[in-house]
Amino acid sequence: MAPAVAARKALAGAPLGLGSDLGRRRPVVDSTVYANARSKNIVINPQKQGVNSVKNKVVRENLLGQSKTMERKGWLDPQGRKGKGLGVYRFAKKYGTNVDGYSPIYTPDIWSKTGESYDMGQNGLIIWGLLLALGFFVAIRLVVATSAL
Image 1: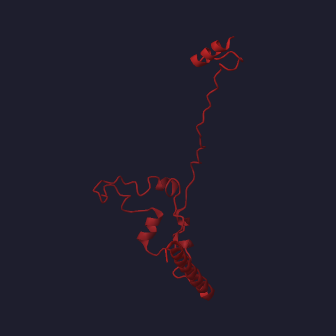
Image 2 (image 1 turned 30 degrees about the horizontal axis):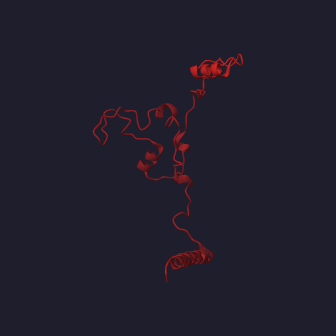
Image 3 (image 1 turned 120 degrees about the horizontal axis):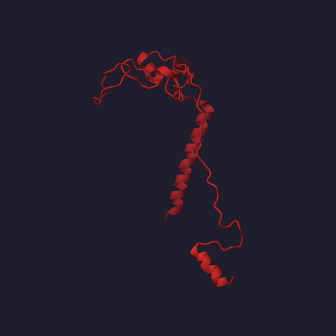
């Protein structure tokens, strides 16, 4: 086959005829990811969510995603829409909590008892002062180096 004819066939979209596999299509692969269903009898215990130490009942129920008001039909939200009586999470009665078992990353039961204050000690205070002085020195040095003083 002349080179001009081969070039014309390539431009027309036809295979060149150099091999038998050039005109074949690749098989279509299903790239959808399918997840296996979880067991139907999984129930999450909300008492193990890490908020048992909260003394205030309203705060504890908010952290657990529970509300006695929202479980009744006919309650009104702040926008005036009528509630359906499903609670905070639709499947709370079925699974024990929200479907994904939501719990805050840091709950009051795992908070540090000494988290109200931070004590660096004398060495920490000296290091902090040295870093502050170094920062001021670098800033003054940059101003002097870039000015016409």
